[in-house]
Amino acid sequence: MNPVTLLTVVVLAVFVGFEVVSKVSSTLHTPLMSGANAIHGIILIGAITVAGQSLNPGLLMLALIAVVLATANLVGGFVVTDRMLKMFAPRKQAGADARDETK
Amino acid sequence: MSLLSPEWTGLLYLVAAVCFILALRGLSSPKTARRGNLIGAGGALLAVITVFLSSRIENIPAILVAVAVGSAIAAPISRRVEMTQMPQLVALFNGVGGGAAALVAMLELGNSDGPWAKVAVVFTMLVGAVSFSGSAVTVGKLQGLISSRPLVFPGLALVMGGIVLVALVAGGFVVATGAALWAVILLVIGLIVGALLVLPVGGADVPIVISLLNAFTGLAVAASGIVLGNLLLVVAGTLVGASGTILTRAMASAMGRGVSGILFGAFKGGSTAG
Image (tube, rainbow over all chains, first blue to last red; front, side, top):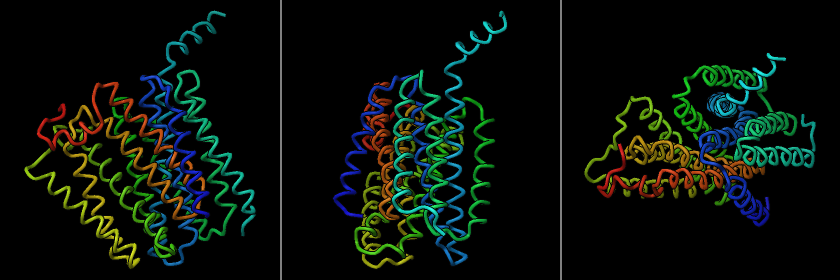
């Protein structure tokens, strides 16, 4: 990869990262942290790439451990974030359910 | 077998990166948060499918088993955990992500040519290991396995300074020689640094430290993208590193505290809240 292209991508991603979360309300701090946490679980594709190239059994074992850890980060991260966010709409949800029942 | 050309792979990774940006933006507002999270998960799924189709991947059955094991461990815990234990779980997932990044970089050390690629390996390993052990300590503190009071001993600042110096030397040896032995030493030092960084933090400040370690893991993942030549890892990791930094500052200021005060307050003797 061309170093200058790489630097361009990194600098632009830094600014996008700053901007997209700059207006977060404080009630969403924890879910946003959890969601960002899930996103870096994408290291899974790195772990899969490395495991897919390993020919030595010992190194393959280490790479597969990385795959297990990264999957836990990715899958667990999105599931736990979704559960946190469910808590944010209970009143609205309950209200909607009650209205459905009265129909 | 690679079914996708590099161009198609790049385009699909771009779509996944956009999904991650939309996910972070969605998560910033209560109305769009849940949809944002789902968009992020969709982007991740797309990226994982893409990696299988884009390059020559051996050992596919073993990899699929590993993915199934990881999902089978993480998904039920995430569904059943008590609401009060969610911060620990987030810290745990953050830690294993950091550990995965460190392992990936270490395994790729042999394939990385040129000093800059090796510098990226060293950075990923060190930051990933710090995130792993630091997160483990935060889990211990939140679960009550370790005292949530700031743990400090005389000369901690000196020990910390010394060990950071040793880490830099070990990192230098990894870049110069590319030897596996130095890589393992570097990994161990990273683990010690992570633990020493978080032990002095008081219980009330632990959530902010989790957010900071989350940003660290993001940076480790970005560096691993440089190691592997994978732009999606670079973009996603940088996004998390940048947004995580902003979020950490926002969380600290919401509690009326500064980030450096939380991390280094105990060193100066002015202890953090216990």
